[in-house]
Structure formats: C-alpha cells, structure tokens
Length: 93
Image 1 (cartoon, one colour):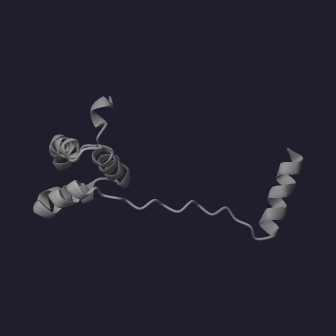
Image 2 (cartoon, rainbow, N blue to C red):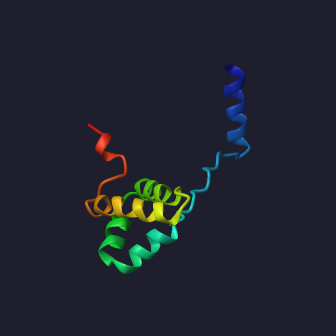
Image 3 (spheres, rainbow, N blue to C red):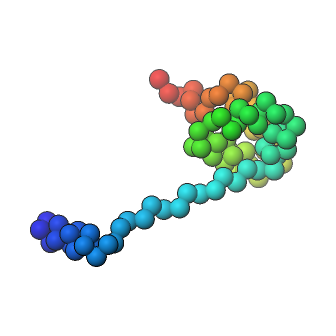
C-alpha cells in the first residue's frame, strides 16, 4: 500500500495525470436519420434525450440486419422518443 502511495506522489510531482477516454461519437442509422429529417418534432424530441438514451435508440435501430426490421424497430420506438422515454424505462420502478 505504501508503494502505491509513493508511486502516486511521484506521478503527481512529475505532472502525470490520468486522461479520460475520448467520448464516442453518436452514429445515427440512416433510417432514423431519414425519419428525423421528415419530422422536426421527432428530431427535437430525440435531441432532448440524454446522450445515453440517444445511443440506446441508435444502437437498437442499427443493430437490426434487414432494412425491414430496422423500419419496424423505428416504428416501435417513435412514440417512446416523442414521449421522452428511454428504451428501457418501462423496466424501471
């Protein structure tokens, strides 16, 4: 334990600092992007969500392999986005 504290003091004196990992950029699937371009209300509601909820929705739509499935997912999540809910909010108490 003492060795760890001494190492931390040496690192502090040397000016070393822990750099946070760079944030991931949000990759919005084409279907979700097209829907937001058609509906300003959807785009505004999506942008009002937290970055984590935005990422959940984008990953959910983008994870489907077929376009038909992505469009189906988009239809299901649209009311939830407009209501300001997260993808998994229905499981919270």
